[in-house]
Length: 397
Image 1 (cartoon, helix red, strand yellow):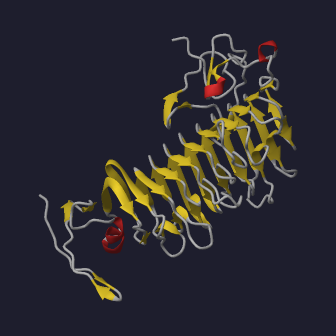
Image 2 (cartoon, one colour):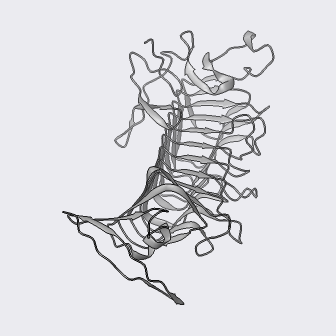
Image 3 (cartoon, helix red, strand yellow):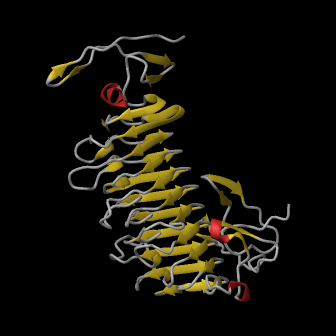
């Protein structure tokens, strides 16, 4: 049976008397935020929530409402559509729209846009606590989409989320910027059109970049598609990775360029489809001193060097001439609709049954289990016979 409680909240410098409605079921407390209720804005919930609470935010635009979340074990989610945190003229602690200081936070179905701060490094979310899970969110047109600090015990998971057009334009701000943490997982996400910065950047000790669409498309100006500047034990599996004609840097993946500062520095790039639509470039750059770099079962379509640096290349397919005017005369991966970024295989693709079983590393299966479905969904990858090369398994159904 639900109970209703009233609480008076006092704020420093001035007093606010408001009626807050809490719904309690068992030990779980739910705070309901809605523009048409007394408790209208998420920053109120950030002041009154306790550890373990759930904050439900009704869909709508919450203009210039910014917050610092200090509680542990919070779930914050948009309901009845995405709740849009739009903050062109406000920021929390000169860091961004939401600053997360508590541990074990879950954020679902929230949109963040237009974060900017005086030092030009504002983020939709600035993560300072340990452990964060983000699902089904949208970060766009911020100076950074998400920016995290250093916490060697923290694990961050982002899934089914879109990042678009984040970056100040200085090359130091990005769609996704993960600092020195224990583990970073990005799966079933769509990161694209970072403004001069990187679509994905992570300094984590362990990286799992799995089944995403990471692209510049026709008009993007990002730098790297994926930057892992401090190495780490990193798995890049089942992704669609594309560089457009206007990118700021001609490398798609960079590994270890700022020093191999993690305990283990091994790179596994397995069953991805790469497309370079720039005139030249480098698909993968690996710094000398990397413990292991295994590049297996990938499609590399478009001009450029496949690997610059140490690494083992196994059963990859390279199609450097597909952008020529007479491309029908060149070797071709036979993708369903390359100009429109549909990289599934056609029935006559040379990638079918051309791969090698990538095996298992420290208990982690390198063979892809899923494949990306746009937008931001997944499909089980069923392998019959030899594995196909690239991010998709051909289906005859």
